[in-house]
Image (cartoon, rainbow, N blue to C red):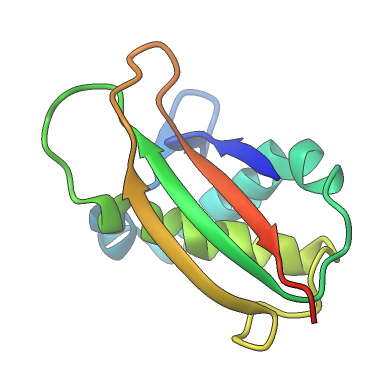
Length: 127
């Protein structure tokens, strides 16, 4: 299962929050809460199409807008936090602990100036 996550989410009518650890660590808690709530709203339709799952592995694949060098973990870590919390809050997994998310990985794919994103690939684990 593959779903796409934007590189930023709206936090007000005229302002977006870039999903990046550097922005996250310096933001006010109210901005962070707004970003997390809006991320879940943006991802809601895609997440609701997923089945309920017990154990999964998740891969985060970065498609940046430009060739500028970036730290994959700075970007994917916030996507991971927000996405895994949303999976739990929307009832797709029981919890986001290691019993249910048994692993994750982050990687770079290629530049996509027309559709920058993080693709999230979910693999279910059979018992």
